[in-house]
Image 1: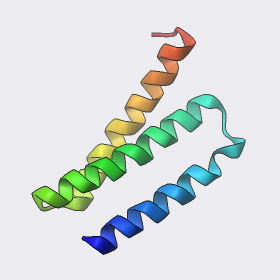
Image 2: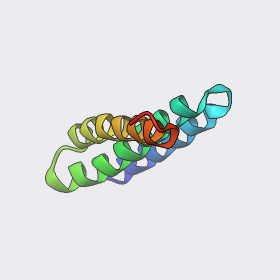
Image 3: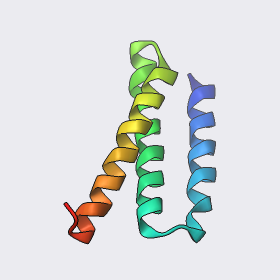
Image 4: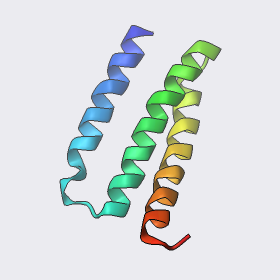
Length: 76
């Protein structure tokens, strides 16, 4: 489990460091996906499938990040 957590932390840091050339929508979508994947992996590790939780959490987080951006812009 420790190895999984370290791997997710490294991937999250690398993913977030690449946001400098992105617009606000792309940054929020990527950040939401990374945060969702990390949270989903933790919950999935407790229930027995860390990768399943990371995949589901990443998808939900990316969708939430996109929706948040659209709300901030007044589109939703």
